[in-house]
Image (cartoon, rainbow, N blue to C red):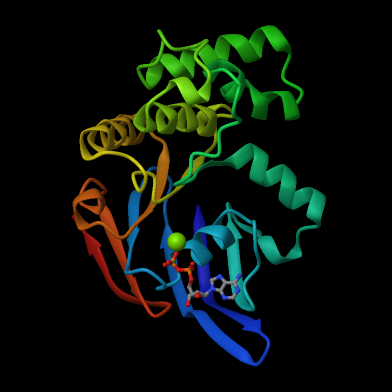
Length: 224
Ligand code: ADP
Ligand code: MG
C-alpha cells in the first residue's frame, strides 16, 4: 500500500542545510499498525508530512497504492489526500466554538457529502470513540482526551484507507492516552491501516511494528 524508496529530505534555511530524512526506504502493507518512533528532531513529522502528501521529498520516490506520488498534479494529490488519508494531529486542530458533531462533519462538507449523510456518519464515528453523549458540546467544553477523540472521529469521517497520527497522545493525560490507544487497536482490528508517530516507547508498544528512526535514518524495524 505504501512504498517509500530512497527518500531524502533536505531543508535549507539561509546557509544552514538540515538533512531531515537520509535515504530512507520501507514498505507498509494494508492493515498494518505501525509506530514510527524516534527522539525529537529525528525526522518523524517530516516523514508524516511526506506520507500524507502534504510535502514532497527532495529526492526519492513515494508510491501510494501503486501510484507514483511525485507525478500527481496538485489537484490529484488533494483528491487522494482527502479520499485515502485521515489525519490526527498532536494539537487536535478542532475548530473552536464549534460542536463535536460539526467538527466531524466538516471534511465531509468539503467532499460534498449530502448533509443528512454527513450527520449520520459523524454520529456513528463519535459513537465509535465513545462520545455519543457529547455531540453538541463545543471543543472548549471537552477535556483534552475527548478533544483528541473528536479529532479521531473526524480523521475517520471519509473512511480513509490510512490513518496517519502525529504524536496523538502528546497533549493528553496518560489515562486518556490509554483510551486513545484502545480506539486505535479496535480500528486496526477492523482493518484500518494505522501509522502512528510517537517518541514514547509505551505508546509505540501498542502497535504491531515499530520503525525506529534516528537522524533521519531507520535504526531498527521491529515486529512486535
Ligand atoms: P521530529 O518530528 O522527529 O521532531 P522533524 O521532522 O520535525 O522531527 O524535524 C527533523 C529535522 O528537520 C529537525 O532538525 C528540524 O529542526 C528540521 N526541520 C523540520 N522542519 C523544518 C523546516 N520547515 N525548515 C527547516 N528545518 C526543518
Ligand atoms: Mg514532530
